[in-house]
Structures are given as C-alpha cells and as structure tokens.
Image 1 (cartoon, rainbow, N blue to C red):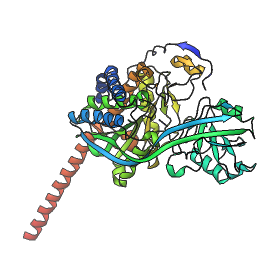
Image 2: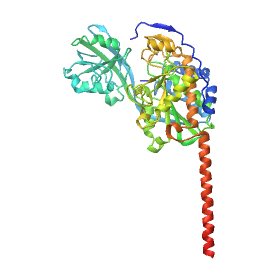
Image 3: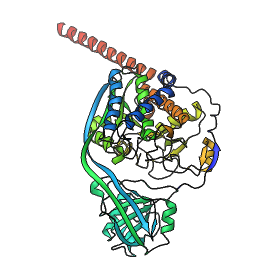
Image 4: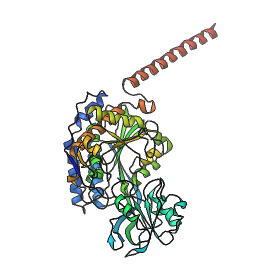
Length: 503
C-alpha cells in the first residue's frame, strides 16, 4: 500500500462478542466454512520463502515478484480458472540515499517514489517554512514569503504530494520536505516520473513541527534513487460459470516494496484472495462470473491496476458490477477498517460510486454481526488499487487493518493491541515478514472476503438492480412465460388471418 510515542499496552485482542447468526446466500455460508486461516497462512509461508530465495523482496519486475505471480497463476490454472498474464510497462525505482541534516543533526526522511534525485552528497540551502492551513503548499500564494533557492517545509494535506512539490518548484524552491499531519512518518509517491520537479521526501509530524521553528536554518538534503524502464505483469483469473456481463471482481496487489518481502503489504490480501478463489472453484454454481486480479507495481503508483482498467473498453467496464480491494488485512497491531463507501464518516475524499455504500455495509454486517468485531470506516485516500475503478464509476469497497497510522487508546480498548503505536510498525520495511502478521485478523478478514464474494456472486441487485438467486430464476420463468404467450397470440392471429383469406 502507498514517530511512535510511548506505548500503552492493552494486551491481547479481546475475544469477539457473541453475535447472532448472519443470514445470507448458501454460497456465502459455504465459502466461509471452506476458507481456512491455516491455508491462507500457508500461502504467506510460500511468499516468504520465495522472497528469501530472491534477495529478500518481491518488488515488481524482480524475480521475487515473478515467482510469486507464477505461484498464484499455477495454482489457479490447476484449479481450472481462465488465467491471463497481462504485461505492462512501468518505471522501476530503487532508493540509493535518504538523508536530511539540519544544524548537524540527522532527521529520518523517506524519499518519495519518482522524486528527482539530488547530486551525490545532496544539496544545502536555507529552510523555508510554508504557512499551515487546510491546503498547505497547494497554491502559489502559500509561497509568498519567498522560497527561491530554498528547501520548502510543507505540512501534508489538502492536495497531492505531486502538487505540493510542483507548486514549490514553480515558486523557486530547490527541494521539498513534507511532514505528516498525523503521528507517524510520510511514505509517499509523486505518482509518475513526469510529475517530479524537485527532490522530495517525507518526515514525521513530530520532526516537521520541530523543524517549523527553524526557518532559515541551513539544511542538507540528499535524496537519490535509481530509475529504469521495465515491464511487469498482472495475474487475472475468472470463473467459467456465471454471467459475463455482470462480473464480481476482487483484487489485491501482489508486489512488495523494494525494501522487504511484503508479507502483510500485501501478501495478506493476496493470500486471502487466492485461498478464496481456490475454495470457490472455477465452475461454481453462481449467477455471476467472478474475476480476481493480483496487481503488480502498486508500490510504484497503482500502475498495474490502472493499466488494467484503462485497457478495458467502456462496455467491458460496464460488465464489472463491482470491485472489492484487499490491501493489508493482517497488520500486527490490527484495526478493523472498511472503506467508507457512502461517506457516512464525512472525512476526506467523499463517497465512492453508487453502490459503494452497500459494499461497505456487507463487510461491516459480516464482521460485526457474524464475528462480533466492531468496524470503523476508512477514507478512499487513493493509496490502493481501488483508485482507477472508482475513477471510471465502478462501485468499490474493501478491508484494511492499518499501515503507518497510529492506533488510538480507544481503538486499543476496542480491538486489543497497543495504543500510540503504528498499526504496522514494519510498514514498507524489511521486517514485514511472517512475524509481522496478526493471524486472528487474517482469519477474520479472510472469512469476510469469502462472505462478500458469496453474497455478490449470487446477486448484485442491491448494487445495480441485477437480480440473482430465486429472483433471477423467477424473472427468467416470467420472461419465458411472456415469450410463450406472445408466440401463442401470434399463432392465433396468424390462423385468423389465413381463415379470412380463405373465406
């Protein structure tokens, strides 16, 4: 998926509260019974071993990703799915240097994906502090104080990282430092190599607030990355049964960052999706076809999923009834988030396309009523592969257990774990390995994946009005009866006509 204070340890996750039996389609109930957390974990073990044998990572275009993709594709082919490997171009980037020095003191910084590089040894310039408001650094007026030849310090929020650094560059800045607007570091992307104008990195909220009092101080910024044009590929699998003009689609990114094996981010979502597909089978008794996507180059700016959606014609996009995205569903200090499809939280990007609220409700109902696990909403921030699906109007939803954000005391009391500590302390690091997984969360969320798939493979009527199950059969029977009646009426009229002629 694109600094912690002292910990308040609440302890093990509370046991799920007693919950009523959840009513739903037979396929949904069957899938939940079949999808076993131990089998999902076995896929994670496979991804860890693939990473270990290939330089400790599974980043797009590396051997680690290729072996991961073939592990997934081969299992699906053996299960009888129609499998496609979709190749696409992208710009590979790998960090060479990340250093920020202020008055002789080192400040941890993370280079943003597709940031231009500084010269070796970095650039040294005065620090210009951009005033804080709801859209800090987003408009030219924010730089009226003068940033020419300086390194701009900008608070996160209000617009994309790409816009902030581009606006700073237009105002004359030679570098940009973006600090978080919530506790924790900034690990961001400029989205595209062409968007990068000046060297840009991210730092924590605490470090940014400390630097904000040092306007004019001499700053040395050394941010360098290797970039190269490469190719990678998505793995797409589809059932052989179900209507092809009302496809239920689920996706997760399979690639890791270059720094580590990516077992939570996003082995967890990929493993849950794979096991659910295998238990569903390639020829399920389902009204709607089911399509799965294991995306590559998500960590380089959602490249694989964006390429896939843009490769479809408008009619092919219409064939996709909905999209569920599963990215980081087993964070070690797990939260239970569902994407806020109806914007009931009133935070950030707003509602998803029509039907997204129902997708959210289906997951929330399962976890809360089926598992007794409370769920919070999370904004469609654009940081994962639902982005382009939403952009073309496809209803979207999904689950998320948290990344670099910090768990609150209230959340720790509700879900267990540690307050004032990131949901995933190893986010985008080498320690995102098999020891970085909450297996209770993995099991619960894998069941939720299975449940939602079973619900919508049966019927998407509450999303787009296309019925399924008994309603679909009844509609088909009524249509057949109407057709038969029309045929009989036509036959009677024909007989009357012939009789009149004969007379």
